[in-house]
Length: 346
Image (cartoon, rainbow, N blue to C red; front, side, top):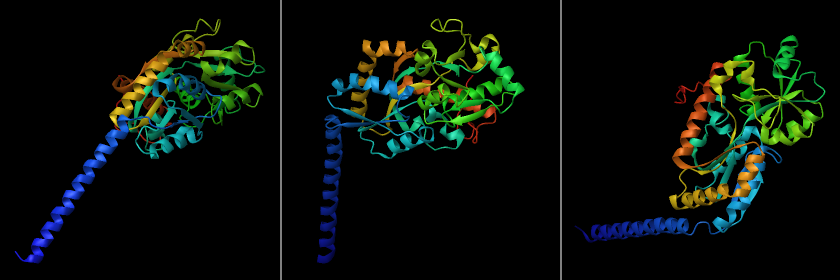
């Protein structure tokens, strides 16, 4: 071997050694950062606008979690495009645990609706906090006092009655598809809003006629008489809504989809170091176990969950299966769940 060849080999060995050391330092550095997590403020991104159910639950749980993390979580609302804007933003951030997604159920429908390639399969479920029950509420000036009366009027005036919506894939959209799948001729005009808060404000003003919304967002409006409840999208009436029937009372066919409702949770980008996800899971579990949060959940008419990791993933997968195949069966899906590898729930 010539002197130049020997020199080249030595240089290569030196470079490789340096690269290995750098890589080792890099891995060690990431691990050290994860062990020190969180060492600075965390950003919490809320999918929907202020005043809605997701916003209310997010802002209630956060102060109870911060003491367990030892850092502030700065919340910001990034509504729009059925939550896609917030979801894509968090998905674009580093997987370091410093950007949390406070979200609802919508990403589980993005694929079949052609809105985004993202779903909660791209995120780690830190905690599924609670799930809601949907109520059909109407403006007080409408002539209906029951779900059946609404159905009869819709059939007499197809397309004339306005339903508040939160866009493709939102709770009103899915419930509307559910109703259409059960009841032939249920044709209404959907009016979109950026969250159920603005939609319910429009409902009170008479700009729309009715809206499917979670009990948590409608409860005070119902009890104060500012809107009226027509039915509960549930298998049985709710004790707190005396005299309000379940949709299954008149249409038992709803049974195959129920119980169904939105859910609220906190997610972090998939690939976040285990040390960081473990600390987040522990902190949010403690926050969700706090009596103050549980009382809030109960008062909002939500069902407590407080689940994470594999248990949460199982829930997410089943919810996605039921709902995406519902949209497929009603012709609302742009992409078949089968093409996306989503099995039909038994």
